Image (cartoon, rainbow, N blue to C red):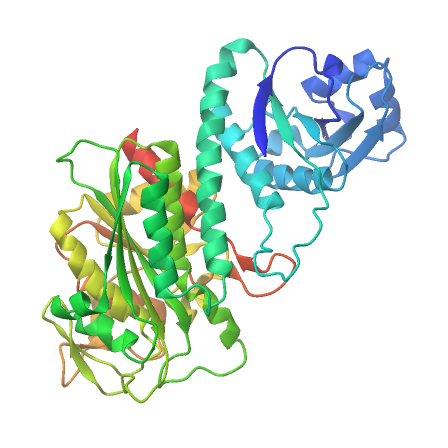
Length: 497
């Protein structure tokens, strides 16, 4: 969708729908007051009928308001003016796009930048409107035999500005918002593709296409033969059971100085996870198409920063493999040597994500990274602990943890820091190898992070377990959420500022 700006009297704007806010107790927002004055009190008359009280997310669509240029006026409840929050503002924007889709309005004027959100700038509000609107417009229809008929006709949204001095700021924010949503959409689509389509080879080809689409991007795909030569025994132990060859995909965005050390993102890309020989139960196994959402979020973040032209060097690494049972698959009890030289006893082949990640995390040491963030749908234990609202964060550096926490609050893609204490390390000790790949039922998300921590001692690192936040397995919004692209994008932009 196209986003633009407009200044001047909103009552005179020729548009098919104008969106204005109404607070509780009938208090009109500034633009609503302008429309009310032009219509000689029409809006206040409507409010007195109690069709809308101004409670948060209430809406009322009006047609042919007297002396107003807009064909329709959408009143949206803003709640109590003193209780406006960042989360509430984003929720209101999501409500608005839902109502806009139900109209046949091609052109729209959004008058919500004037709403005061404590601690938030006009740039933040602009980006959040775009992110919320695009989330509401996204649909995954790529696999339909016949694409469904498009039900909405929205073509453009203009954001009303108080004055022209805000123009350049808002236009810049629109560009950033468009870049972010391009990344989120690509992450969602990759995540939603079935395992028979989105194979490791498919991911590699998509990464190669990025290098064709963006001049700042170069892509390197490491094939299984070289993966084995590099000594990535843990990675190979996962991919060996599948006829689909594994890939280590390295996507480099060169936006900073030539010799500037990069920030590195590493994504778990298990394109389908049966559990291997430690086979998962059949019920719910179809959800394992989303076990590559960590990789999808890294891919989406690389799209977003390339689209934006972020002035920073960033490397995205995707460890892509399929975890299948076969006559050549790894067995519980196998011991493998990782690229780091450490050995791992595989007690459960369904704890495969950490096996591909540990070798990827060793591989990226050659880049001398400023920071490393890995992203993975790693453990069901994380879902039990945190549900879907926050991603679990583990970090070996206080600064990285603080930066991610702030980015999460600003982007509303939040994280919750979990302990990475030495006390837990004993759970993954092995009698026969340097470590085991599981640590028992207790503290499953923590022991998975402790496993990864043994491979990340040379750099500043954080691990994001997004098993609960990266996708929704049921309901009307079933599918990939695109998280944590917003978080990673905010994190990198804050560092670049």
